[in-house]
Length: 147
Image (cartoon, rainbow, N blue to C red; front, side, top):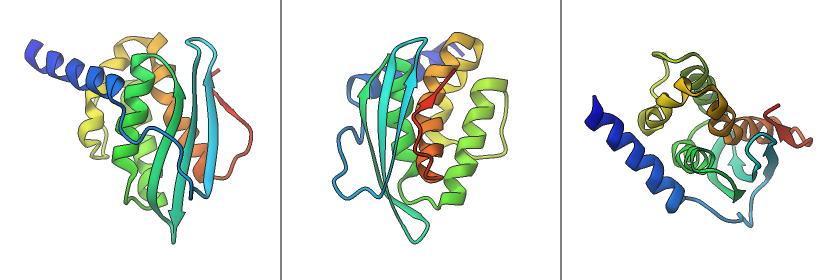
């Protein structure tokens, strides 16, 4: 179990040091901003959705290791997904980090963040990108807060 936890931590550190899909997305047609007052995490999420499918996703901003890694892993998981699949991932991920335990949704690499559920103060860090994605998908214009 310790080896698995070490592997999970390494994946999180890697995504924090080298976030995937970081930067602006020139042809995005959906955007949302998120802010975590507790930690100071800020991000802007850019989506290109065409015919109900997420063609591309990128994020900009700054945050703690958990927030950045979560955003990076999320962007990898969302590419090519339908809006319904993205909503299911949101629900599954949110359940995993807030309630702990199993989820009926296959989260793939996102499972590395399961340990966040043991640290309630870090849940807001892990879910910021997800709440921001949810706002972008549903065209909510107000900035997302984890409060």
